Length: 496
Image (cartoon, rainbow, N blue to C red; front, side):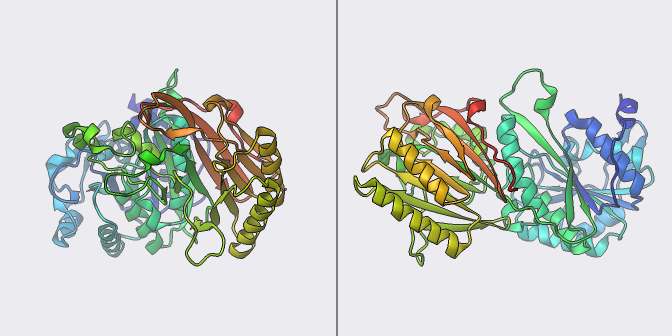
């Protein structure tokens, strides 16, 4: 088996020697992992390999742990640890020696056969990081590694990416993950849907210190590729190398938008609102805690959308449950945001009278002013016609007028569709128009409803959008979501 894995045919090669790589530990992609090690062995001859992994089971006491007595048995012999460097790391109070944690930690032992086979003489030091390891600690660790490991050392972050969700959503999450890593966006790393933000934080800080800031993804896989039927819970893998050079930016941003939320349900018991978020943090302890608590007494916003399922919301740059209020200093009804070197304005417009022509002229003027002043790459406009409803014919006229006058517009209407199947998404010129997202949370006396969740990814001159139908039962959205309707997917061509 291992001989077959080790002799996979490589169809590409690294242009230079990477200072570090991000590789999965999910052995369903063992062949791809092997190809990467083959390519590494062609260009790299490290005297030391540092491998950093999540502490999957949160075992042991220390946030950061290493092992001085570990020895990994492989078909090519035993892979031993650089105990001298490990002791030095422990003396620096940056890690604890906890061998028991390493016995079942696949983030390390799945890589041992590859390291021993392709780098048989190279010393290795494994490091495990718990989920709660804060950014400050990862900076300390990267500083120490930079000062104490040789220049020819290879650093491996053993990290899997999106978990527990269908492949379409995993691909959506991976857009933000890759952009964050390529842009060295340290503030966004802990908002990603990955199994170890601390490991990514450590390797990116270290690569910046060593001048390896040219990050490139050379493979992208998902375990759905190896399944004969669609599965509801997948794992994605991104193979990323860090090469000598300056950072090459990856302008992009992602948005997840939701349908109507009833006023009755919008307010939580503590007075907070389900509103607009720059990020949504997944609580690693949520599943265990929810098992102990009667969730009906909590009355959370997302009562049936918890535990593993709410990882669906993690890793998106912006979540729009409700269009944000305007910036305090702004004279127009917009909230302005920047992500991955792109600017977007989130604007709220509404019908104020039955004179829709006048309203439309005001909206065009307002959105144009926003675009000119803020120099926004995109405008996200939420149009609320609850006060003065817009007919179907008038909706088409108004939405096309807005899209014609405001380039790069994402227009999301509150124009109620009969059900999720009749909600529409339309490409019009350089904009997209979503007629309605239907419901998301309804009053409890409505036993059944439906709606859509929109996933929108933006790059310069390119919009990709999908609608995912959902069911709402007794007021709350249900998981899993249905697959997107192929007729509801929009991806305009690049400019020019």
